[in-house]
Image (cartoon, rainbow, N blue to C red):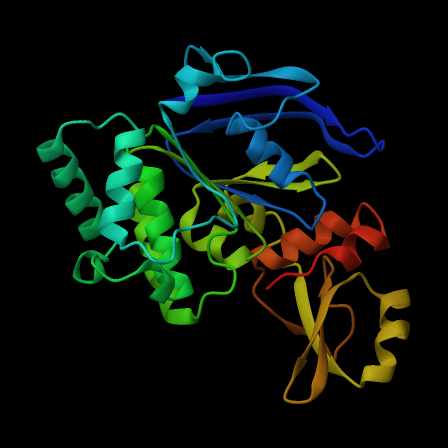
Length: 300
């Protein structure tokens, strides 16, 4: 299975260019989309999910024209938006059964088997009879994935799935996504860089509707390996450091400001070498577009 996006373009009536000739090749496995707010990720996801029209370009899922053959694509699609509603007074098993009917699984025995299997897969079987209104955020996200998996989709799109989850639920959810992504295309849109590093075989960094990087996470990191340095400074020194060095990011460590700098050689004796990571790549690519983009790129 292959998803081919070519020169996809979308401009909103207010003049905002959400997608600017975006082209990507996505194969079976986990694919990460990262970028700041307003980068165009959600527009791309909604377009791929057949919920929004593009102005120009093409999208093909193997032989299917995604922009024209929407009904056929929807039969192969599983979609978990960032926010989705549930009937709080219904149990998980009842609501999943109802959605299975809407998906065309009309045989009662087959439907029961499918629903039970999905609840087992998402680790919700033991709480299947509890009302959805009593579920935690992580449990609701796992229920959302169960809904997305109905009908054995070939393409699964998930938008900010771990936002707001505690570390335990996030880890459980990432393990679930990883197991799903072995056999289908899973596109993961997120602000959390670690999610992409841990899960995805390929990734794209998007900003202002344009693809800045398309690579494997490790290959992107390898490009700056041996070129990252760190130094602890007083908070008042950061402006001077930004004028002198290529400061990629800064954060507090034990009450002091630590800066991370990109340079081919040690900037000065006070700097220590540090291992490059995907956050460094992310911030560097955004900074190349200017300070406004970099300051907007809040990474969890």
